[in-house]
Image 1 (tube, rainbow, N blue to C red):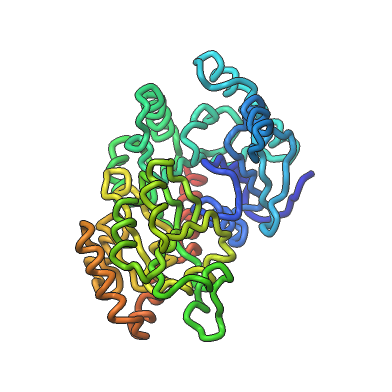
Image 2: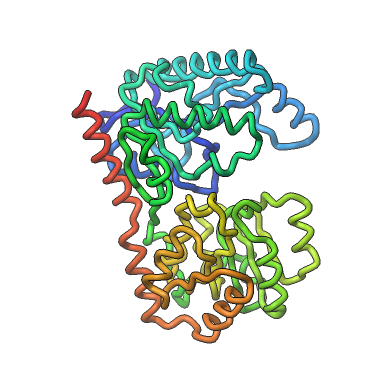
Length: 402
């Protein structure tokens, strides 16, 4: 038997992303499930891996993940095991997708048998995995929605399928969890059992930022001061690259640091390449994030203001606050609410010129200790422990109905 103990329950967690060094909502929740004894074991199901695409990628010299029948323990998080179902065919045609779905269900049930999992809770974060609901012998179904992918998806045929899957999961789920008030409103008429559980933060992870003996990461130590930094995935559907370029031009003697996975297409990347003070670090491990944030003088959120970004509840909100950093953001979900209530802690503005002016004002103010303390105090109200406790209550209600 793989990794059994006498605590909590078993959870099959179907994630939108693989488990890697860049922690997102899913990793924080699963870590919390284990540490709080809400779960005794978690089978983390990664997106299916297509053999043909994996092989082609390897032949091209890319680090493409290949299918694997193995169940691997995740280092550093006891009781969590990763598994990636094989995908034998391309998902281009409906008959191929039907075969892939059956193979995925079979492989998940096989993995559960190997782990001696009996009637686990099925947690679906990957909307494309809706076909698994009701087919793995689960005791209950939780559907966790982190972004409004219906707004994000542009391809008509994929959007129609996504609408069908989203509606199916909202209808079947014993609990549908959303991370933002905007998603709560959008799903209110669809989901039978709807709950709001926002993202959180481990404030202790950032507690040394600002201490005189806490040094920046060697990469960040080389940056020219002041540093106006962004933490998160650099994606054109989130980051206003044009605004970033204008900020870089407005502060030619500063470093504009974009810390996180770079997913910009070539045409967007070209807007930043002529600017010598813009730095893109690529992925940074969760363990190293504080050492990068300690180099920031201003924490930026230059997000585009769209229906998609208004559905988000950015984890970076809690991280910036826990770091005690002054924040300049566009008027997007999460930041606009805090900025309107606490304008001395977060400045939320629209447009390039107001954004740049807010940066100038924040730099002129410096980092008053009273504001740093107030930001950290606010961050402590947003703990992951509190979010996991809310989910535990939801699960108990599910259990009571069974």
